[in-house]
Each structure stands twice: as C-alpha cells, then as structure tokens.
Image 1 (tube, rainbow over the protein chains, first blue to last red):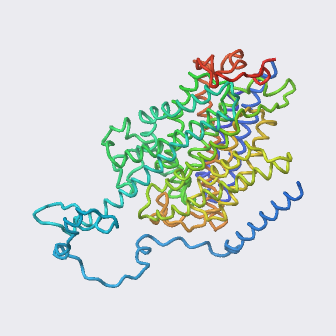
Image 2: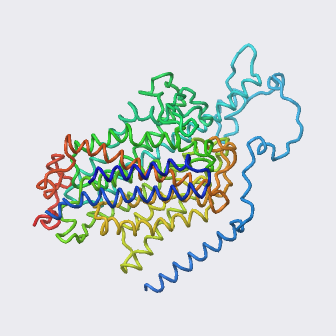
Length: 60
Length: 563
C-alpha cells in the first residue's frame, strides 16, 4: 500500500511540474499545480501514513 | 483573560491589515514599477563633470612621513592612506591601474568577508539546534540526541565535500559578487517542452575537480555547506529518542550527498525551478532568497518521511490512539537554543546576498530587519494562540513560534517590506501551533521537537509568501534568475510568481518526500532504522552511546516510560 502511496505522491508532482507544458494560461497552470499538490498530500498523509499506522507500535 | 487576549490579537491584526492596504496598489492599478537597471541606478545622483585622473596626478600624492608614523597613530588619521596602496611596478610607481585594481579587490574582499562571517554565524546555529532538540527530548536520551546533532555536522560536511557540492553548485556559473566562480560551469541539462532545463551540476567534486580549487569557490562552499547542514539537523529532531545511531549516520550522509543538493541545484544552482521564469514566463522563476524551501522544507519534508517510517515513540499513544504529552526535560536549554538560532539567522538571511558591496547588496539592512520582525511576530502568534486555547503561554511552543517566524521569512526576506514580514511571521506563529496539533492528534506522526511543523509546514508557507508579498522594490544587479526587474508577488501584480512558488512546493511535497522516503526505506531494509524496544524504554544513552548524558541524575521510572 505504501508503494501505491509513493506512486500517487509522485503523480501529484508530475501534474504540477507538467502544468507548464499543458497550458500557457496562468490560471490554468495555477489550477493544475494546486491539484497536483492535493494529490501528493493525499499520497503522503492519506495513503502512506495510513499504511504505516496499521502496524503502529501503539496498536501492538 | 481570554477575551482580553483575543481583543488584543484582533486589534493588532486589523491594524496591520490597514497598514498593508495603505501601501498596496489599489485593485486594477498598475503593478509597482520594477527597480531601474544598475546602469540607470548608477546615474541617479548627477555627478559634476570632472577631469580624468592620470598617473601623474597620483605621483603628486604623498602619504604620511615615516617619522610621524613611527610615533604611532592614536587618532587613526595616518593609517590607510595612499602609501598603503600596493604598487604593481616599482619603476612606474603608483598608477591609475593600481588604484582601480584595488577598488575591485576591495569590493570582492568585502563580499568575501561578509559571506564568510555570515557563514560562521550559520555554523553556530548547529549549537542552537543541539540545545533545542536535546532540551525537548527526555533526559534519558540527552547524550544520544546531542551526539546526533554533533556528528551530523561532520557526516554532512563529508558527504557535501565529496559529492553534494558538485551536484548543487557545479553548474551555477559565475557569481559576480564573489568575483566569478567561473569553474562552476558544468550543468547536466535536458530538453523539456522545447526548453533546456538544468538537472544537476557536474564540477566541484572534492573541491579540486575541473579547476574548482579557486578562492571564490571556497567561499561558496563554506556558505552553502553550513546551509546544507542546517537541513540535515532538522531530521534528527523528528526521529529522536528511537533512531539507531548507525542508521542516522547513513541517512544523513545520503541526504547531504543527494537529496538536499538536488533540490538546491534546481532552486539555486541553475536548475529547472529557477528557470521557470526565463523559460515559461512564470515571474522570476522559483524564488527562495535564503532557503525556506531549499533548507527548511527539504529538512522538514524529509523529517516527515522519517517520522512516518520510524513510527511513534513507545508511550506516545495509548491503545485507542490518544496522544500522551511527553514533556521536554529542560526548557532552559530549549529557549537558550532558540536565541542562538535567532542570532544565527542574521547570518542565514542577510548573508544570502553573498556580498555587502554593489549589486543592490546594501539591502542587507532591510533583510536583517525583516528577519528580526518576523521572529518577533512568530513568537507573539504562538504565545497568543496557546494562551487563548490552553490558558497559559507555553514555553516550548513560544520558542517554536519564534523559529516558525524565522523559517517563514527566510525565503521572502530579500523581497518583502517590514509590514509584510510581521504578517508572515504572525501567520507562521499560529500555523506552527495548528500544525503540531494536526500531526500529533490527527496524523499521529510523532515529532518530539515539532520539526515537521516548524521547518516543513512553515518552510512551505515561506515559499508561498514570496509569491504573495514580494513588493517589487528589491534590485540585486537588475535581475533575478536571469529575468530582468524585481521579484513581484500576487498582491503587487504578478500571479505568475505565485504559480512558480507553488510548483516549488509541489516539488518539495511530491518529489523530495518520495526521494527521502525511498532512501530511508532502503536503509530500513539494510541496517534497520529503529532501536529495540528495550533500549528505547531504558533510554538510548547507554545502549547506543555507552554513557549517560546526566550520570548523576536519578531518572524516575515513569519518566522513562517503564510500565
């Protein structure tokens, strides 16, 4: 599951960085970058962290 | 009491907003004009026409007599005269060329001394980090925490000297303030969307490779090395009290050799983030004056990766996942460390001009004032928040508020005005409290010192704040990241700058996190990251370091987490 989270996190970065080639509009780029950041945050906090919480030391 | 504090805070905030509105351009008005190019700036004071100085004029000058100098110079009027100017050719005597060469060397000398001394201040911040982190941990781990802070300096420096510096600065090109640094001219590039972008530098391994045994390069190395070490020491705080010492050494080496230098190249070394403006018209590209993103967010994001990977300390959460407070063992160390860090920040931010002479570098005064103001408002923000929410001004969070304000102002310090600095710091002070609560209670990422919140979250806030508050008044040689004019944020008319800053944030969260996580995952597989539970309960001083930090203390069993 953590591996999936890493892929999602990198995907968010890819969308944000790719925004510069996808559109020349500043507003369009801003929207894409924000989407990319949200996706990366979901990958980090929503997937990777949750995967590690399943076996956290306080649950044992 | 809470109502009084709330009223005070609101009055202060509204007062600041009023001042900012008074200074900001009205909606729809023209953005602030860019600062004039250096040539125009140099013409500003109209000088009267003067006859050219010739070699003959210089020969007519004479210094103080030898017999006068032999009597001493208590008034300081005989020292530093024409007789102190070195002559290139004794037969010709003093020439105009000698004087002009000395002027040039003096300018570079001023910049060398400025950059070196501010670098020394930044180096001293290691002591501040050591005190803050050790004070915030438990007494049973004092030796271990202090030793991580001590050796991260050496491990990081070794990695950076061998590999990291070349990756970061190997293709930065000539830095005019330091007289050139021309040997740093080899950047690995690729084509992206029809534009050439920089990926990593390739000159400067061991400081001997391809002509990098150079006085300007040495200044650059020293200054950049202490910045890199600041990023590394952030991680030791989050993973404290449960990190295997050998894993810490390997992890720090990898971060100093690869993770930090790569992002630093993209932002400062001529890499693709810095060219977002020149290549794609996004403001002046990613702008990070002194490293809210490059130093603090890279450290804080890596700390987040480590915090998730290594897991919380035993006893931090009960079986229902409710967080238990594990108090700091020495608040005196913590606050003393914060003061040392605040002192060192006067090297961190003003020193990032890489000079005090020419190219708009007199702005060091503005940068220093911005730095101290943001630290002040950061501590106010945290104190007021904690006072209103919990009824007491918490000592450790007050310190973290100061640091949060300083972290946040690090990127914008060279581009914003004092009022914006206070606002940026105030927001940072509140943000660090909210963020600590989030990671502690919601995300359940155990961070004994709050490094993720102080450096990661507020580092990102600092990066964003450049894109909002940069006022277009700064002028460092007429351009920034090869884009002419001054860095200007959204509130002063340039939305593209904000987009460039956000792409930097996405890179930190998406790429730097992934790289840090994968590196530390491999270390987990090879040597293991976490100490045994028995060692953690006893305290790491004996199992990991072989001696106690405080051998004459009697440690309470309940403080050691023994059930």
